[in-house]
Image (cartoon, rainbow, N blue to C red; front, side, top):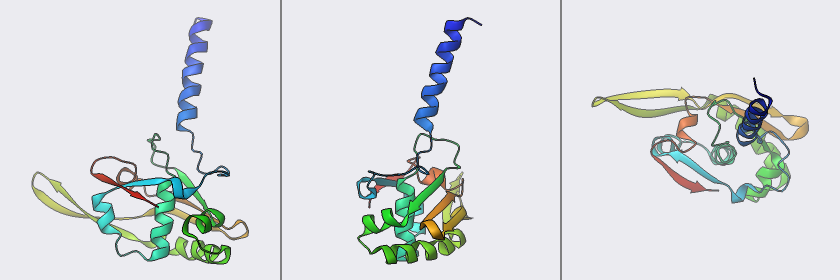
Length: 164
């Protein structure tokens, strides 16, 4: 293969990787969650009215950190107690407690939505998270949304904007 063509292909590949890199697990210094926005489908918004305040806050913060250009639906998202405390104006102690308790609730939460296929209505249930992990010594959670829910979170279809 021509060296110039190889170089061009390498540049294209590098640019794509940079655009789709998951920056959510890297140090978020300088990034303020309060400046993020969240898009989610109407169906999902209706489905999680039953969440507690801590679960809703964690959900909004985690959703705001999803990378919208990634299409693999398996993004590991990190939320630190420091970011949580700053975004929701709570003490660090409260933030650590909230993140610790949120892991249990988020991984066990079942979302129910309705789908229509050829005028037939179906009720669909699925878990919110595939993985939720609290790292106690570091005061942070690592979560992977259920890949079936990600399309409801990153602007596909009937979404609307919610800000933190």
